[in-house]
Length: 262
Image (cartoon, rainbow, N blue to C red; front, top):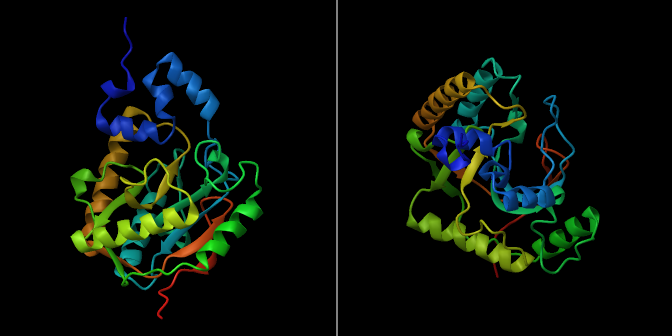
């Protein structure tokens, strides 16, 4: 009997599994399993659903709490809390809602990606200070707000976030130009730099679903996405912020990126 591989599974099943298990392990190849053991990254949530100690820094845009997008996400949060899935998902608090503009250092995954000009054994305080010193010289150099639109409902198959894209070619050039300049400044260009998917995270999985639970949760997720898109198809973001974090519940602002005029 031959077992199905990860690539034989339906798309929705691959999406939910990929949030729990590294893809290499799901592919099942011996080399992939060996690589997974070498490259294992601790999860962001513990098996009992509590927040794990998962540290790092990032450049994000917090959502305006007066915006229709944020108000719509509050309704999404309420539905998640009443979903009957809290034995599978850790729901993020609305205070944490943001969109990442440029991924910084994830210290539990530092053996996979790390800036080229920082020693691999540098501690977190040094790395955060190094980034901060560079960013204080940085000119945001683009017009605000940053404007992104939610992808259509049939493309909202990531069961832990809402996916977005720039609203037009001009915004695409603006966002990609900003990310390119940050990568150059910070000597840090991750493998997904060119095809990074903008998103707002809603929850994480800490326990695998049954097939029936997955079916119900995908239906719920797309219902919520459809309602959010109907109310607030476009999100407008103001100044990005350099933040540090110890987990996924709180992102502490260290510096605000601004336009510097001569």
